[in-house]
Every structure is written in C-alpha cells, then in structure tokens.
Length: 456
Ligand code: FAD
Image (cartoon, rainbow, N blue to C red; front, top):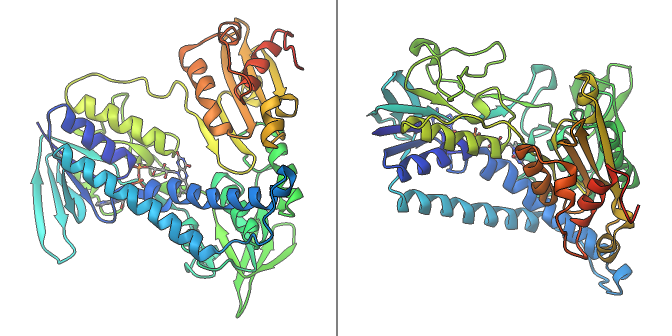
C-alpha cells in the first residue's frame, strides 16, 4: 500500500509513522519544518516560555520557602533561545522517527492532482509527482486576521510572532481571551508588559464554566492584567509609536502592540480541493465521514483541517485512526472524551460536559468539589489556589470535570479516563490515591459527590 501524507504536524506525522508501522510505503510532504504548528509555533514553544515564567515566579517567591535569591530577573532573549533549543531537539526527534520507520520526507508544497496523485513543488522550482493508493490531508490551520486589525506581523501580531519577540513590549492589547490569549497574555505580563485582554464573550475562556474562569480572573487581577469582557473592537488605528484600539462601547485603548488571538481557521489554500471534488463546509473545514474519509474515496483528512477541536492531541489521535483506516481497519469512536487544557498559572483543565452544558441539555446532575487549599500537598508546594469539580449524572457516572490549580493539566488524565470509560464517582473514588499528592483533591471531590469528603 502506497500512502502520501500532506502536512507533517501532529496529525500528519503520527499518521505517517503509524501507516509505516502497519506496513505501508509512506511519503510525507512538508513545506516548512516537521512538527507543524504544534511543535514549531504552538503547543511546545508556548509551554517552553511558560516554563521559564514559572521558574521566574517560583524564584521571586523563594523567600517564602526560606530560600534567598536577590538577583532574580528574566531575560526574554535567553528565554526564547531556550525555547528554540527545546523545539529543535524535538524536530530532530521526529526526523529520526521518520528515518527509523522508513517514512520518506519530501520537502515542498503539496497539491492534489487527482484522487491518487500529489504534485510537490520544491523550493528550487522543480516539480515531482507522487502517485499512491491513499492520500491523507493534514495541512492544519492559520490564525484568523480580519482586515480591520491591520495585521502586519510587527505592531499587530499573532502568536507566531509573539513567540519570537526578543524584548517584551511596554504594553500589549490582547484581542481574544481564549486559551492562546490567556497563556501569552500572562507570560508577557510576567516579562514586564502591561497587558489588557479584550474578550467579546461575557468571560475569558468562554467555553468553560463561570467558576473556572473566575478563578483565573482572580489571579490575573492580582497580577494587574486588565480584563475587558463583553466588548468587541470597532476600530484599530496604527500610529507612529502606538496602536489605538476603539472598543464597541467607545472606550479607547492604546498600546505598543496588539496580539491577535481570536481563533484559527482550517488551512487548505492551494490544495486544489474543489477541482478534485472534496467537499468543504461553510466554515472552510474539510467534510469527513466517521472513518475520516473525505467525499473523495481514498482521500482522508485530519486535525485542524476538519471540524473537530483544534488541538494537537485530537489531530494525533485522528492521524492514527486515519492511518489504520487507510490500512483496511475500520476505526471510529475518537471523540468520547477530549481533554481541554490551559497552561496558565493556575492551570485550567477540563473534560466532558461543563455544568452550563449539562443544564442546557436538561441532564439531571450532581456535583462534588474540593479546594486545593485544604490539601497537604498544595500547602507543601505553596500552591493553594483552585479546586477540582466533578459532575455526575443520575447514575453517578462522571460526565464532566474541571480542575483549576497546580498541575491541573497532568491531573486531568484520571478524569478523562473516567469520562471515556463511563466510570462512576463511587468506583473511581474507591481507588486509593497516594498521600501527600495533588491527586487526593480528585479523590476528595469524588467523595464529595456523595457528601463523604473527609477533609472538606
Ligand atoms: P498543523 O500542526 O498546523 O500542521 C500542518 C502542517 O502542514 C504544517 O507543518 C504546514 O507547514 C504543513 N502544510 C500546510 N500546507 C501544506 C502544503 N500544501 N504542502 C505541504 N505542507 C503543508 N494544542 C494542544 O493540544 N495543546 C496546546 O497546548 C496547544 N497550544 C497551542 C498554542 C498556540 C500558540 C497555537 C497556535 C496552537 C496551539 N495548539 C495546542 C493547537 C495545535 O497546535 C494544533 O491543533 C495542531 O498543531 C494541529 O495539528 P495538524 O496536524 O492538524 O496541523
């Protein structure tokens, strides 16, 4: 079986390796660097920067632990250099995996010619045609930049440029208080930039529950991050030294830069979809069936190109499922429980339904919760903000959970499993959790569903 993959982000590269492991002869076409958005300008670089700002914060609070460090400061240039090193190490890792799994990396821009042929235009202008039995499209997404914002990559930037700034701007208006806006807003605030977040919805992290967003807002306010919700932008004016933003309510904001983080859209430019007969929906996502096959037999699509959450772990899982399907297995059933993570301080992590969604769907539910403040481990590490909240249905099955607090994104795995397998709060709460660990907060919240939390 010959397979050609276009795009070497998490969707494409994991599909390529899985298909090769299953015996396919695989070629993967990439126009930039392997690893895609996630590795080069997304998940990994943002978290590498946030790791530096965590070290800074811990160091600034060292006295509380009886440790003294009089000369703590952050150097953004060196932070960026460290981030670049982390990224390049992982890029090498993917290239090594391609080699060891005999996946053939073809550098260039890929385009469909028909259901079996991909044309690749190389940097030197030469063109190669790759003919295969199956094709996987995994070309990802790009930031949404409406014209009115005058995006120029210098004064009005997206996350891509923000991740390469060598000196922190004096001030920045972050348009969009979603995951990327919150993570980068807090990072630059900690680097010394005065941050204002403008969010159209009633709250930042608008798809999460109100109490989850409130906990983050409390911390942002403590750090003097200004948050303006339920407000849009009506005009952007770029001046000599400043950008001036007029909000819908008439308020005027000025800053050195704007960070645009209002979302991303699928990127299928130049793939030749229409000519080949591949259907796209009105939002520009490629339409796929339950097996991730497009409207053209033999051509599959995954990741940010299709209408599933734009997350690296979703792309990876879809890549693996598509690879298995291309190799003749009938795999479906991806989207039972998709974890959602925000790597701010405190971290936010959630899975399944929010309380708001359970109410909207008319599902009878109960909740249990536990504050980190009451937990030995949280006191030990000095991170007492936040809570675990569990939502169960009438049969006690965990249908949703959220964690705000230390290591929330790692702690979520247990609750993701609960939602995935339909475990009850009683069954999961019976499991012994080690002491003293942060995971005890999950156990206590599960017990609290039945009013049996010992430490609440
Ligand atoms: P991509 O990763 O976008 O890869 C697509 C690849 O296709 C790219 O390498 C591109 O160069 C290549 N390509 C495009 N067109 C062509 C063509 N015609 N020919 C050849 N190659 C082509 N997700 C998380 O789960 N966790 C996070 O913490 C997280 N943080 C993020 C932070 C930021 C700042 C951003 C922007 C995104 C973040 N995401 C995060 C989202 C995550 O990066 C994406 O969901 C994921 O990368 C999508 O994977 P993909 O394989 O679909 O596409």
